[in-house]
Length: 399
Image (cartoon, rainbow, N blue to C red; front, top):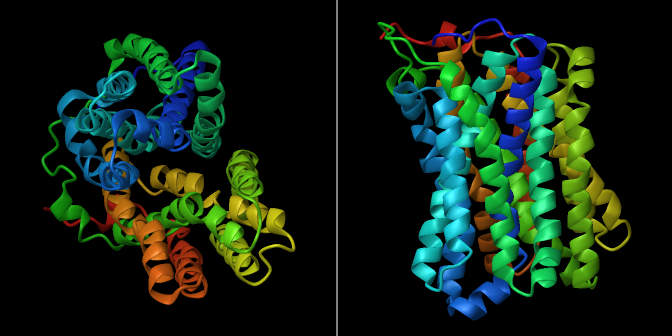
């Protein structure tokens, strides 16, 4: 890739603000719709099947569209891809807020999620290009912004809807955020970062022969499965144990809220642990402890299990950070990010789908949580390989 010209402190601050704004948008499409799903279904006459499609769209779009991001960046450039992604998010969120047809609502949701999927993939290369000397810090800030966007969209959509008297304005507010984010990115289009005509571009058939790509993809999927399972089933487990739905929802808010300081602490922790496997095993241990505590003592200390699972969720920004750290070139970062997230989100579907299926099959939560414990343990096992100073470019075949 062509690199941007040397950047002044002012431009680096501007780019950092652009990256943070981009990250804030990447979960708003998901977080905003779930909290007003019932009024949406009532107004649109949405069936339970259509609602199921809507809740499955994020994983599908993140996997399918995310895998195409490398091709898009090669064709139009990194900054143009970021601007295009934000335009898709703004348009999709804006359209779905004011339609009266379920099919159009789903199509608009898919458009916004496609933009989010591309944004997911290009975050690590953006950090690599503009902050090669601050990868850990900027990656942690971006990861905290993603979690913050999910938390804010879930927390503010209902109050905005109640203040305006309509759920549509609650959803539309996040289209405005995407539009505001798009504007500064337009300024960066004049200094885009493009892929050169390399004799051996990093394409899929080369990546699939690199062990590092597969290890990172499965690890990404294992940690993402934890997050989607928590959003989908953590409150239900507490409610089945006899706690109120309001209290169960507040425990889920702890999981998302603690993810922000946990992500921001990553640079310090990474500096102390270096290439040792303490961090991934730490994520694995606290996540396993959180699930087992929830299974065995769900009513005794639910806040503690939520806290442990939230800390374990810092595996997400850590993996994003490692995508940039385990690639030597800008093109390598884009290609690795697309492969890891495209395949990883398919693995992530095991979290919510597998949890529900095993619960229906067994009638309890023991088998689903056992599956999640196994996936959490993979974070430590695979992370032990990932911390080694291996670069993806060194594992790629010549052609």
